[in-house]
Image 1 (spheres, helix red, strand yellow):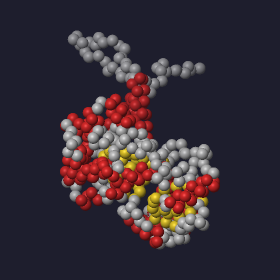
Image 2 (image 1 turned 180 degrees about the horizontal axis):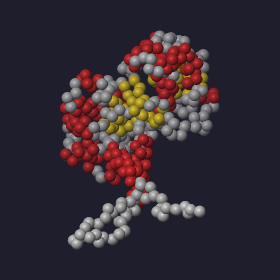
Image 3 (image 1 turned 90 degrees about the vertical axis):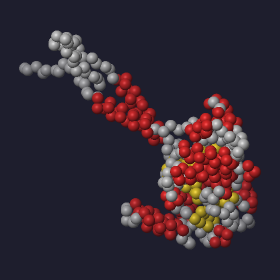
Image 4 (image 1 turned 30 degrees about the vertical axis):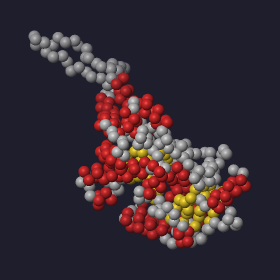
Amino acid sequence: MPKIKVPKSAPSLDMTPMVDLAFLLVTFFMLTAKFRNMEPVEAEPPSATSEIQLPEKVMLVTVDKEGRVFFDISGKKIREYTLGHLMQRYPTMQLTQTQIDNFVNMGTFGQSVANLPKYLTADNDMKEQMDKLTKGIPTDSLDNQLSAWILDGYQGFLDDANEQGLTTEDLKDKKNGLSYAIKADAETEYAKVKKVVDTFRDNSIYQFNMVTNLKGSEAPDAKVNGDQ
Amino acid sequence: MAEIVDGGGGGGKHGKKTAKKGSARIDMTPMVDLAFLLLTFFVLAATLAKPKAMEIIYPKEAKDDDTKTKLNKDLATTILLGEKENEVYYYKGFFKPDSTVLELSNFSKDGIRKMLLDRNRSIIEAVNALKTRYNNKEMSKEEYQEQFGDLTGADEAPFVIVKTIPETKYKNVINAVDELEICNVRKRAIQDMAESEAIAVRQRTAELGL
């Protein structure tokens, strides 16, 4: 009987293409990933069925559980112009170039104008401390600094749009225009959110994107009727 | 395993290859492991952090009492949101402090949604039929939006007012608006609760022992 020849070499598979592909994907994801700035405030938005994406160009006001108000606006140029306008409005606040750079690269913040210069020079520990202690951006009618940020944010956005050569017609297109988003914690009292909304409305802004979690992406809220 | 096989040594001075016979192999397993670990991380991180948003348009005037006069009694529904999460009530038509009974409800699919659907069946069915036709590409987007606006903005379309007190949880407001969105109710408003209604809510809560 003829002998069956067993091949001596160990069975092996050339994995090179797979590895190539893996690295290609790794590189792609690493390069496209945008790291979120450290957020100084925790706000877990409520869930809803809406599937609208949050727009790219956005002015975001965050309201946390205690009703503290935080402000953020996207785009480095826009941030720079915004701060410029705000410094004209509050001449007592004069910032160094380093502080301006810090502001431009920062994310959400919730400091009053008086505390902002100190916040912009603080190190990380100090910042954390200030975030914990802050009462947020003042929204009371005597000194509504949120209103100032909203106005100057819009001005900053317009400056940036002018620089890019966009006309008023272009800005009507949703893609180019500035959107306004409010991200509030699910447990926040509605009056606190309404105060922010009313501040926007005083500045003739009526349309908002309320940031939500997609329903189903987390465990459904089972205690609607359960506990009292 | 993935490996690099040395293609053979360079020629020596004497023209004869003297390099060792065994090929230089690098074990790439750890590197591949790492690559896939990173890949998994970035894939997961990239898809999880996408915030969604819900559009809400507030009216220009802070106080619009004239909407009340325009309301058709048979079409109006008011949702009252109290302080506690389960204080979700509704009443139909106008509020009469003596006779209006607040119905307890919730945000499950048998709650507010069922009530709205039962109440406005004809319009909701028409909207759903419109959506199906649009999804089957029987009409353009402009046509769809126009007809959708006509249907949901028609005189006989339902009108819902969500009323809140200052202590109402934001979550409940969003839940209520979400239900309206699901039921295609476009004629809607978020308002502050009148004092008489707030009293009624407190009474009803005490009555039900919530």
